[in-house]
Length: 342
Ligand code: 13P
Image (cartoon, rainbow, N blue to C red; front, side, top):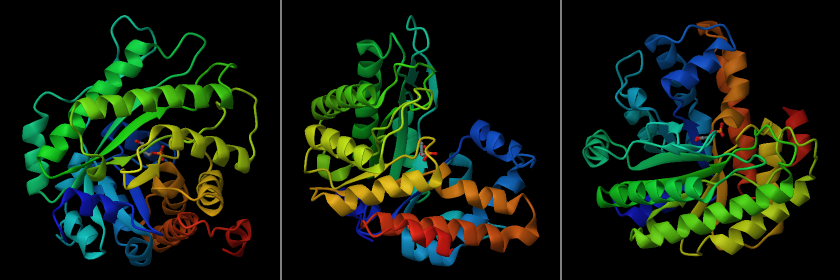
């Protein structure tokens, strides 16, 4: 495969494919395993991820890239094959989460800033040597009655821009992920507020990327969709989510960016698919719009697996189904009755 940033970025958002986010940190994967009463040991994490990466049909036809946690980048399948080789053999690009998580932003109450810039240049070289060709850094922005602050939006956008510039210097495509969370506590977290805050965060983000000299052609944006907060009591139709999300992106994202790969952020599996499909079906857009889902691709597979070797085939079927549905959504061809048929 070509080593040019633009070609890697285009491969990551290839038409009709999307990204599997399997980069849960040690803390997050423990939470996922707790939900199915499985202990989070290194072997169990390996077995679970091997189940996903060896789902050949899903991986070859629907998945363009896989985001890994550091442990998995250097890990081998049970038979000794490096995971990176399994992913590459399926025609997908291996990627790596490089941020060190969101920490309390000093003096800013509930707000957070993502850390991990110190020593990042050296870590990126090591990840590139291990086969990673893209990276991910996630910032979180919380909506409440008094947040976000400009300090939080700016600090996160600046860190993301510094991270992105370091990635490109090392031959790695940065996924830039400024996530406006949907699980805020506040009743004023309406869809209108989500639209306003996401616009602000993205305007600031692309300004900082410009100042840092980041090439638009060699990056991928990973945004949230425009949805009402989970505790707002508001409901929005699929069409409304699609319309508002497209409006924000058109206002904020340069056409030189090859693709936008959404996070699922706590939407149900089917909502995440329906929203993506609606955008691709109804709008003519300058970028490819696809998925980079964690929960919305894995939740069903995790439940089918339950940590038991005899359930691996069932887990792979569940993952393959969601991967297929989302691959169809990436070209606007998903229909609700395809879910029932399965
Ligand atoms: P979710 O799709 O579960 O939000 O995860 C995507 C991701 O990688 C968040 O950084």
